[in-house]
Image (tube, rainbow, N blue to C red; front, side):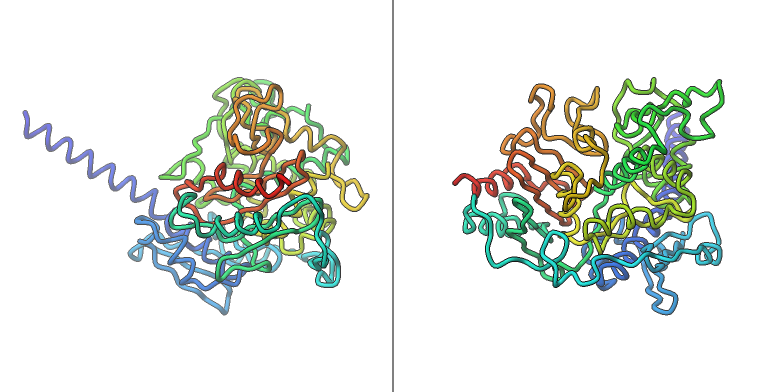
Length: 456
């Protein structure tokens, strides 16, 4: 009896191991191929730099990757198995070849708009990159520079330091920035889930154009049947991560999130096919799938205008020349995760919200959209608004996440330590980009030190 039990356990372990490997290996190959492709062709880094840094964990290091300069692609595999390929296309960044033939993917037509302004080095920040000789009053530059430097070198925040870039903007002027070796003001970096805040912005413009409304239900044709409970999901529910759709937001192993990002041809359709688990609007659950449904809704609404829409209506309007949102094979932006931009451009995005959606006297976002974005979502314990994270419950000032930071602060937040902090009461935008796989950079301590510079 004991031998049979041991045998049964061994069979189960082997079977589960085979199952896990069959799911995990394609993700390892795809994750590496996609990351190397984007970092090489968008950021100008070398494949080896990405392998030595982003892909140095135990599992990810199992992958082998090959750069093909001729067709601008990266191919990855694990021990010769589960080969995956990512291809670069001008204006679109890199896309994994998933559930589609490569020829079909490359045949997709796209004519990217010109990037504005054309002469950024001759135009003052924030629209351009020219910096003035004088800085605004109201801060101690020496204290600020010391705090910025500590983000790269102080072991009390994180050791080894994972910071790659810091940009500080005060009263619409860039007053401090610093970069790790290999990175500079012109190197676009991956925002991961900070992209969600950009996707929410795209939705806001469709609302401004009266093409969508936050009260809209049956926002996808597939949900519009009378007997489909998903028909009751509103656009507002999706914006607030309160759709009630079944979802698993896990990145340590195979999950809905990793399958969506690295194995499927349409991230939005994959997420939209999930059944309803909770009543819409009642339960908050952070879901990258929800944001990709928003991206899919925007695509269905915009049609042929979709791929150029972010540049036409946001990026060119505020000088985000470097910004690239990367689509999945279906041609839908992976709005949850895949956008590259320089640190200065991420700061420009923060400034758009700091200034209530107005840029150089032009209203870009709908009126009160910034207030909506930072309004508290029910059941989130004051942590979440609408595609933005909150520092505290804006209703009563409770549930403070960063005690050293004013309670009115809110942020675009991304995997591995990407942040754009917007602090209206101090007229500040602070960008920190880096590589922190353990997510243990002490933002509260660092921001506390940095904000000391403004106690003058």
